[in-house]
Image 1: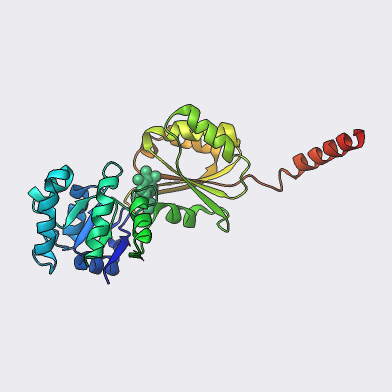
Image 2: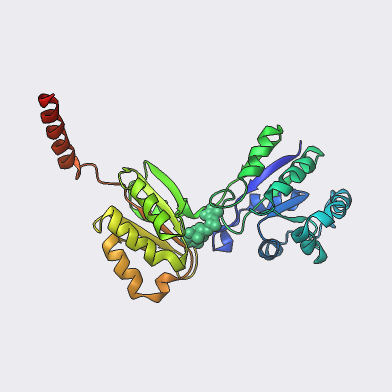
Amino acid sequence: PACLYIVATPIGNLSDMTPHAIDILKQVAIIACEDTRTSGKLLSHFGINTKGNKDEDTEEVTAYNNKNDAENDSDSAAKQKGHNKLWAYHEHNSAIQTPKIIEMIQQGHSVALISDAGTPLISDPGYQLVQAAHAAGVRVSPIIGASAAIAALSVAGLPSDRFSFIGFLPAKTHGRQKQLTTLNARTETLIFYEAPHRIIASLEDMASIFGAEREVTFCRELTKTFETVHKSTLGDLVEFVKADDNQQRGEIVVVVAGVNVAQDDDDISIHDTLLQRLLEDL
Ligand code: SAM
């Protein structure tokens, strides 16, 4: 039966594209992607035909596309360039696209979801679609590959037995500081995504809220030419990034150690004695 495939694509180095991903993307009737231009380039690099004319599903899919053209601007923009196998699926049209994609699958056409890079749904669109697929009894299958979060954790040299993926912090200072404050007491390793234009502000907030001595690994441009993996403390990292403009560019994952429980044992015993005295007073 037809299936919804969630397909990972490389996070930088194109050699990380898997043969399985290429196979599936060639087979499916529709490839739903965030940006038809970005994905169009990736797919043509791997010889994956997005014009649909080699695909057994072409006729029906094209008819379906034409029927829906008026309702879907970005989709028809892609088709004007002849990419009728590529459907735009992003934050702003997911409510409209989700039922259309589910309907396609129910009619027997498999669909693949990809994002601009890495694994869909990881700080990327797709949750609504996967949720709807389950609700409709449509099979969902992962075609696995890279995710920047796991790549960063694997080289961070920080405890990896327990970790939380936090993703992007709020863009505004107040919201960011508030969220960091709620994360301060967490004992597991924390994984953050950050945009280059906010990296210094975020690292400064982390250093002041988590403490300048907290361990951190800065992972930038993973799998690409100018890859950085730099392990230090938050205090030192702020200086490292400030001192080199190049470190303020590109794609960044920040992996922060959880609060050191052993170090805080003193605090805990102080609290315990305090509590004991208070209890005695009662
Ligand atoms: N779905 C993607 C994944 O599986 O990693 C993440 C998409 S999210 C919109 C983009 C963010 O992921 C970037 O801002 C950066 O924080 C991180 N990222 C993506 N590629 C990266 C790379 N090659 N090196 C470091 N971080 C990367």
